[in-house]
Length: 105
Image (cartoon, rainbow, N blue to C red; front, side):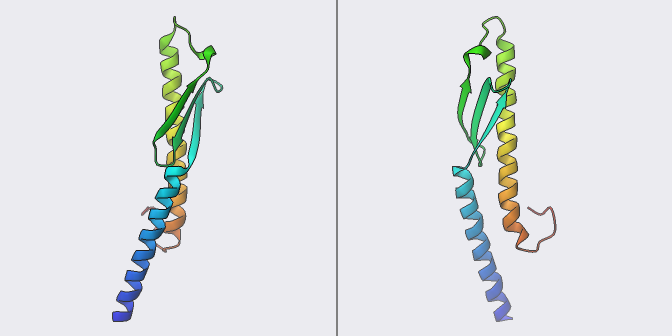
């Protein structure tokens, strides 16, 4: 029984270490979302932090601000979707090695 407990503790420590490393890696990883054929570009980290927003001059029409607002929203959502996908992929690889039930992570 003591041997099993040691193995469980060792597995917990490794899992915590692996997840912490993956979180650090995600915080440094960048993804880009865009809208309007690249007229608006948003860069986000793998931990869903927006790092930059670039808007091309062609996207700025003072008579159609709502179009620019929509492009920014689409680009931000695109970047965040890609960030969540990257996070899910990285964390899923760690969890896959644990032989846990599917969908737990």
